[in-house]
Amino acid sequence: MPELPEVETVTRTLNIIAAGKTISSVVVSLPRIIQKPREPEAFAAALAGHTIEKVERRGKFIRFVLDGLVMVSHLRMEGRYGLFQADEPVEKHTHVQFRFTDGTELRYKDVRQFGTMHLFAPGEEFTQPPLAKLGLEPLDEGFTLEALRSRLAKRTSKIKPLLLNQEYIVGLGNIYVDEALHTARIHPELTADRLKPEQWNLLHQSIRATLERAVAAGGSSIKSYVNGQGDPGKFQHELLVYGRKNEPCPTCGSPIIKTVVGGRGTHFCGDCQPLPGVRHAVGSQ
Image (cartoon, rainbow, N blue to C red):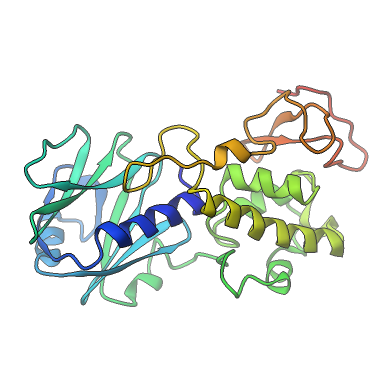
């Protein structure tokens, strides 16, 4: 699933290729993608004649801000957008086509068919699902050390599942949690209430720095991710632990361990990220 850096990259690309265009009509080929309104015909009719003013991100969601409407799109596993000429052949698994008055089309393709689209009146999107309960934006000014600690410091759950919980911090997924915890030298199974003040400081810095580097690299193309112009991300070449089971830790040289934490495959270095009282076997899982 695309995480914050990938969705941010797609959002920036959509601002280049789609902002300023006026929708003449919408074609929906897979009705279940449209969540609000439930009727695809009503969705298409509501968007006709509206202009995309800008595209923004909230967590892992994309907000298309139009003149008088907001469309919230979630890419889920493999959703992607691309701009095409109207006369170009429509690729397989293309489920929604936003036809513009200039003869181009923004097409939504989703092989796994898990993506969703919601339509709202401006401002309404923040009071209803799927955006209503989202937590801190880790790249915003409001993501301070104090804000992070106030959300998590008293919780007795393991730190990795807490960081994955979108109601606390948005945009973080498996890749970037593993990377941030490694840079902060925090074991993914350490409970939040046991983190020391300096560890909170390192974690706060690491989350922001990891995401900023990933955004600058256009995200990580682990499987099929590309941005709206068809370009893959490059941050996968900079990953320190994720996907590197049994490879030497770039910090200390010890083999990277893979285990399962909170039901998610988890990569870390047992030497750089020790858990008091626990000794990990190399190559776990």
